[in-house]
Length: 474
Image (cartoon, rainbow, N blue to C red; front, side):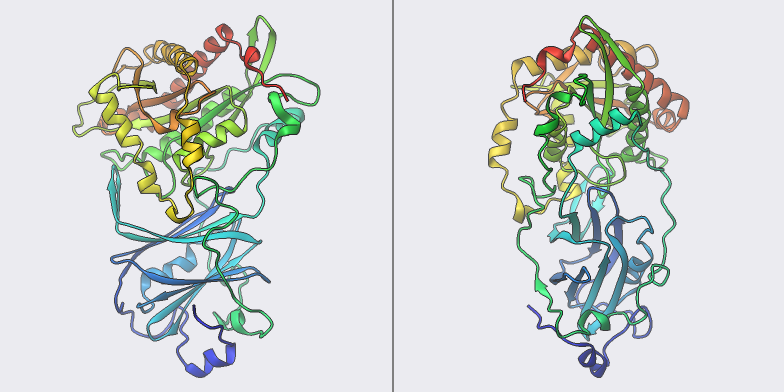
């Protein structure tokens, strides 16, 4: 690990360069792209290169900053672009500074708004669906404490408010100077002898069993999906597929699956939050919970874990299908299978969807999911039967507004459907690889029709299968 150097040493060495000067020549690796994915859950910074990057991370606690030394390269235009990619509303990063620390090392500094639990790791090249990536260096910044999502839903219900829907339009990028970072790019990082850089832990407390999600605080005080007045309400977990580094399928006109399914999820959330289900037990209000409400990557097991933590009554994963030829069309609904897939097509689809983690990227050094995987593999026959009932309701409503690819609910081993205690379905809304259906998926009118159809099927399902009987004891 590099020894801490002070500002005087840096200036004396004469190797410092910030966005100016020196030839833009890569020594051993070429940086081909940089990306920033801000979200409330965590912010991810990705640096893509033609060969794997060797790095040394350093964390400074006061004020909080993460520095990463990248060995074997010189500053180039792609790295310079990272400075302008930080959004003004990023929850964790206030600015990025980059400079030539030594003739063969670039130092990247992330100025942070708050203390974080950082993870720095490398990903191998991958080519899945619409994603084609070379080597990637990933910097994930997790909060040190995450709010209880179930408690937030109950507070939202008590206040009679609706969760804010983020804009689909990205905030214009801002420069480091706009964010108020010092003009001296790296000197202040090492300016004080009292501020000693500390090695980054190999595994941070922010990592869950999946290695990519921070833990939630206890929800025991708000168990059973009830507010303080004792009113039971229904929670539907909406899971917009893919996100962040994982675009999902990409249509002929460049439409990304991750974008259209998030838009549909937002429309469904508004409908769910304004719906009360009439059952034999009385009127039950509904609330929607999104596993992601912006453009960021969520691992498959974390999606399931999020739904279980809010004690969801249903789990609906939204996708937009793709096939090798543009002729394939129609919507499909899938449920979990405890055995063989119901068809070769269902097995192929599950294989494609289960590869999402390869694209989005997991920190394999922090994975220890043996117990969790065992739990999620115990999906019950009752869960699958309820999932098939919900899927049948959905197919019945979707066929009223468009074509079905298959008239019955298909089954296969989808990893994202393996919640043992939540009826779960995966909806392929249309074939984004079909030019006509790609156009429909981007149409506001069709998105509204689809949201209405799925909402109607959820209402019909709950009216016949009220969740009150499944209420868990505190």
